[in-house]
Image 1 (tube, rainbow, N blue to C red):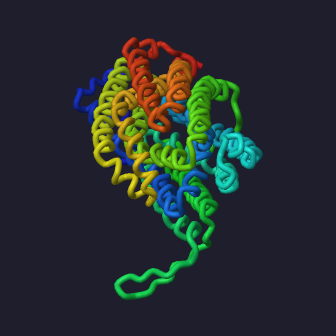
Image 2 (image 1 turned 30 degrees about the vertical axis):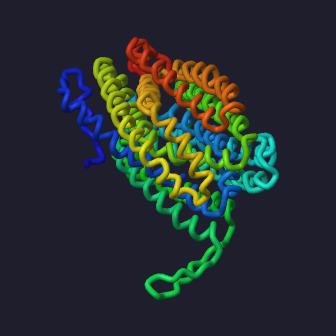
Image 3 (image 1 turned 180 degrees about the vertical axis):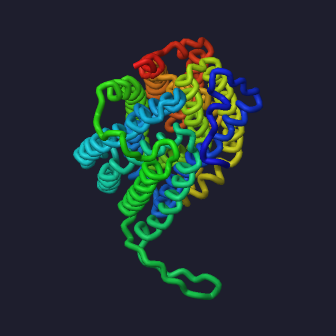
Length: 478
């Protein structure tokens, strides 16, 4: 597959791509993005499986702070989108030099914000597990895990920003390969850092594997190291190898009010959306924590296992952001609408299939994650509850990506606020004392169905095509 796309075949004023060509382009951008998302989740799966072998307490330590790591990671995604969506629209409008200027400003802003987020996370790392009502024997490991995660946030934001910019330029292959490489790095670093030095007999030969024996702390260090290496590689390919965005002479390194205002218009509503989602996950953790260590571990591993089901949706959503953003930049609203519809249909079909697979293979997935029979039984039960929500969950994910490409980031934030806090948290509070962890997941399943319907209504009404904040179409004459 070629790294570059001839956008003139689709976006020029006189271009009339057929349905087959449009569907092919959606698939072409979606497949590598799906692989990238799956590899990212595979890294979490590896962490969970390796730490799970240490017992329920180690698993619960990571699970306790996982909702907060998603919250911080979501803010990083929002910052990256504020600049990458501008790049997609500028490339679609044929303004390559302006896109390169946005790249520079995005990297500078990302460095500052990454350092601030890292400092904030490090500052709360000790008290966070206690506030989340973690068990006394779980809190120390959970605090150390979150401290190391926070220190790696500048690299996480650099990886996210660089990868998003490459994707929005049409290069899905490079970020995909690098994310897969990150997964392999994580396996190696975890094997060296989590377990002590040990001897394994293989084919009659005794092999000694070195190890630091750091347990949960080793899992955090392994993830942080793989994140840092991948971030630097991603930035290298963006700045020096990208045919569209690589650094060239004549483009200054300076911050411009217009670019920063556009980034704020795009990022702040998305950051609000991520804070709403992340805050709801943190609230859900506080609801689950009193149910016991087994419930916390099962909940955390179930979320990890489910990720393999919904990550294809996020990959297709990334492709939708690129396609809609470049279509809007080229003033091809007709194509933007068609690409949004095609991507949404593809996402719902793929996640309906993965949801069915998750339902049937739930026990097997948990057998890989933990040897604890109690966690396996409870986790498989709640995972099967969630399987029925996957098609509508896909709709919310992909439609949000399409709306983001058009610059419509406020509406998804409002819809998520209504859905998460109005349905999931309120129903979870009611059901958790009566049904335990299954009650929390029944509430989650219902909420995801409500969320998907709300996003489909937003897509079909078409008002997102008229959003102009964050869109650069109006600035072409400047």
